[in-house]
Length: 258
Image (cartoon, rainbow, N blue to C red; front, side, top):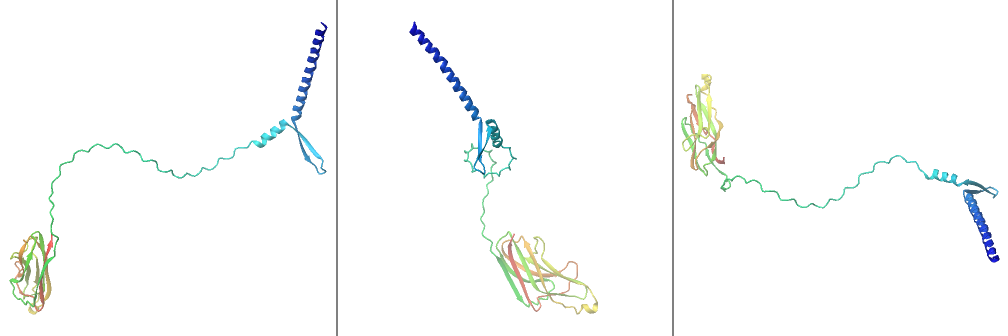
């Protein structure tokens, strides 16, 4: 019994001893934590002595929060547009469309190849015709017409004169194979003289170079006798006519495409 009693007493002593040391440790840990809450800030003075200021952890935390938090500034300017992007990959071909409606039947046209147009002209000239007839054919020039669908341009240039004591009129005109032009109208030129004073009419004798010119259509292809004639002007009396006095007279014939 005695050894057992001694052992029990030893255990009680140990239990009483170790809790006290744990409490002391807990108290020392609390003091150290409390000391940590105070931070010393020391600066060296002029004499070399340290000046220390103790700040609590809470004041340090507030000071850190004040310097670490920033106010939001104003909104920045809108940035520039970026560069255009590259072209994308071509798409796949679409589905072929449906056939259209059937068209109307066309007309058959036979193509005609014609020879290129070649100039065709002729000139006949006379020196000093001095033809003094008042009615009839003065002179003529034969021309070869190549096409029936072409036109003839004719020109007579020469000296013409009309003299009379009373009012008179004379007419110079072209004929083609003996007939005047009908496509569209005759080709002509007239000279008319009024009565004037009797004492001066007998002395008027003026010769002037005059032209008779025009186009005639509807003349058949082949040889064509082109002539210049002189005649009267309807119901007006005729006078003393003269053609080609003391000068060159000429007739020009030219075939032109229509």
